[in-house]
Length: 309
Image 1 (tube, helix red, strand yellow):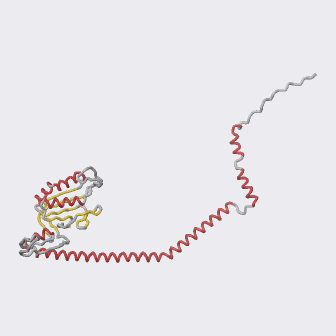
Image 2 (cartoon, helix red, strand yellow):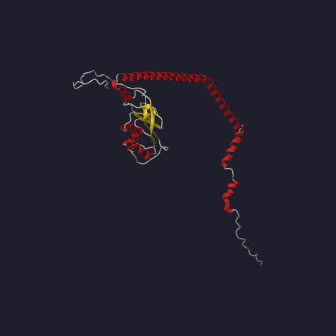
Image 3 (cartoon, one colour):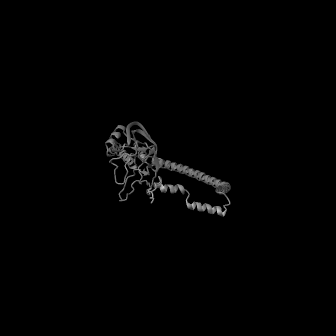
């Protein structure tokens, strides 16, 4: 009997080299998602009338036409309304110029009347001042004066953000290198106390009724704004007045402002200082006292020629 040859085992087939990259192979083989393919097939079956590029061009053309229509309509409306707007603007400018001219005329009238009233008041003081007419006119600021005195210049510091404690420090107050209205009040009061006979700031004559106030950061003297540097002129014995002021409490206050806040000051004795008359004098009441007139207590008083206010 013949024998069958032995059957040899061939073993399992060798694995593919790219077996471990099955996901990548699947992505390569199916690059286009099935949904896209179905949509493309459906459009082809429905018979798309226009290619995609043609539709895009038509949409762009329609948008450009709409934009051009809007721009044209806006330009037409602007062209129609331009004369009306220009006329309204010109009318407003004319009204502003007219009102400004009227305000200027009124301001000139006020200054003229104020000067006339001040001149009449000065003449009245000179006529009814008796033997002390010149003294009354000097003290009231009714006449310009000149003579020896001092020149005191007070100016803001070079920097406005200085800090530290000082004589002006208080709660809620921001200390800076700017000169304040109360600083000028103390300066003027110190000069009066040191023996000044007449005082002016930046050409503005001060009287017993003058007020130094603030409006924001501006300093007002009798409601007229001043611009730094503030030049204070005072009539009196120059050297004695300068020394007395610097040694006074107000002079030391000014020195402390200079040391702590950088405020710049200078004082010098002058041989001839000229001060103008006060722009206007406000006389509230004035009654001449006759010879033998009785006062409020019933006592007789002598005729001194002075008025009461």
